[in-house]
Amino acid sequence: MKKPKVILRNCQDYDVDAITGIIRESIAELECEIKGKIFIKPNVVSANKKYIHNSYTHPTVVESMVKVLKDQGSDNICIGESGGYGIPSRMFLKESGFFDFAKKNDVDLIDLNEHAMVKVPLKKGVCHREMLLSRYIKDAEFKIWMPKLKYHIFASFTNVLKLNIGILSHKERMLFHDHRIHEKIVDLLEPGYPDLVVTDAIDITYGFESAPYPVKLGVILVADDPLAADVVASHIMGYNPHDVKHLKIASDRGYGSLELSDVGISGDSDLEELRSKPKGNTRLFQVLSELETPIQFYAGLAKDTDVICDGGCEGAVKGCLGTIEKRSPGALKNAKKGAIVTGIYKGDVIMPDGPVLLIGDCTRVEGRLEAKKVYRTRGCPIGARDLFIKVPMIFSMPSPMLDPRDAALFIWNSMQKGMLMILNRFILQK
Image (tube, rainbow, N blue to C red; front, side, top):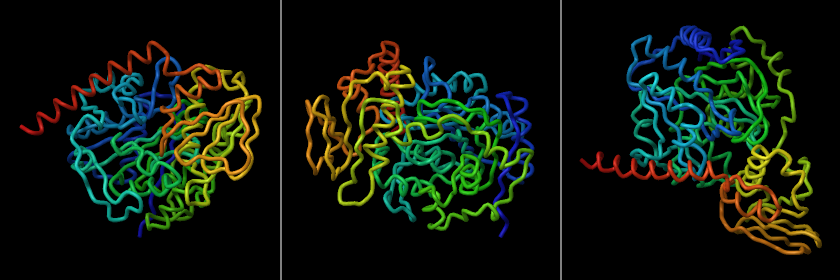
């Protein structure tokens, strides 16, 4: 069998002409035959014009892809995303500039949650045995995944495989989003298996991936195989792919090898040189105990397991605090002293002069619990959004939910989303 191919091309700036040339040449090298209905999936998990500027695939990269497609005669192109849980994806698509780009280039851009979905069975699924899948994805004859390369708070890094969380509707987004998250990610590779990968790694990011900090890497990664693309990306980000949970699971399920020697790597960027570039606190928010804050963290086990619930309550805490700190730098350092507990913690939690917050339905302290006051937030699993009011209130930090501009955007885009869902349902029935 032929080796899967990964092309690493030097690209220092978000320049449409330069990126268009790189994509065109890479497609020719990969000998891709692109035709029929094309679906493009970028990463637009979040965006905010005031303080979140680097969390998403840059529109220039997607615009370059569309230019290549149109130049070769493809005109049946749809770009779609289901962004961060509980917030209208159209809001993020607007804030990131995607709607402006789509209008300028006369291309369809959709919030997947607003359109018809069909329930599809998954033959390889371990957690998801079936799922609601957008008809635009199901009917696509050629799928192009365009992730943003980022460090990730519980998945080590996010590139192609992790991108598939964004093909889920918000209705099903949080299913198995707990200690089973790594199996879930691989489940979604079956319906979300791309024919072509084009990764925006010009600026990669660290910190909470939905509100991150940029680092210049200066490369466009193009590949014809999703796992091979992630294997190469893992080396760039400083990880052994065998140690990245979802990559190991994907390989065990037969999606491919985790060995670099089994990947054909080409291009004008050197892998080892790229590996040396990421700088800054790349573990920021991956390990809560490393944060500079008077808040103490106690991570317990998921119910009926011997593993930390990294993709559930602990992940929600990381996401909540990462967003607060990005919006209001210094908020964590100046927070009120206290403690946050997730999962079933088997030790003592002693905080006589401060609050203790228990997060999640199953969370409890099996040892001694002493606090000035004990709070609890219910949910299983729980999302970062669900903590944006209570955590800041208890620990005296500014809440991102109380920003007047953001609140107005949320309300307006939620109304638009609701009206379009009704309209699209009516059109489908006719």
